[in-house]
Length: 258
Ligand SMILES: C[S@@+](CC[C@H](N)C(=O)[O-])C[C@H]1O[C@@H](n2cnc3c(N)ncnc32)[C@H](O)[C@@H]1O
Image (cartoon, rainbow, N blue to C red; front, side, top):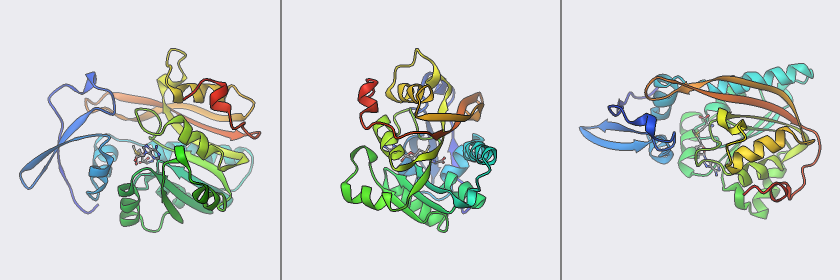
């Protein structure tokens, strides 16, 4: 890692805040900047800050866990990962991509909403992605869609990027539609997304998918995603499934998901 940062956590208020509202203070050249966890552009601009914060200090291990579950599913059906053509949604600076690349996938294309993510991925993990699109998949231009389809994806990965104001259901759904009909989905979600009381669009989408005829679940595992700032354990589900049929274009509308 190129540099170590002076990161200061606040006295004791993060538990009352939503995960995307939590902030910390970064001290650089005696100048303090307050950043939220979701200030991705500011975080990615500083080489190694994302890794230091989430992976060293808060012990995130989601890319390894989701990749392990995906590998397990491929092993079940005796399919080699070396043939997998992956679209990595919410790719950020390439933490998931790095694991997939190490595991030997055939093609790997990143997609993220912000240019700072692609810049950081190319800066810090220049050999990981075959291509990287800065795109909002909720409004996919037909030219971009054509280009993306040329990759003939058979797997969608999405790690630490669903819920909490990150990737909306429509963008995830459109990414799914870029994957072959019998392709794989591998992602993680916070535990409450499987709870019927949770009414967010993404939570509904995951529940509808799990119980639909369009997805076979191979793995659904509860695991520790990372620590909170206070050191408490944040549990997520890792989910790997295989699509079984072409999902209707109006699936979201049918289920009142927006
Ligand atoms: C916590 S980071 C996860 C990055 C990486 N997958 C990892 O595991 O380290 C969430 C990423 O999702 C991206 N993101 C948020 N909304 C998005 C959207 N609508 N479309 C694509 N990416 C989005 C953010 O820019 C950010 O890079």
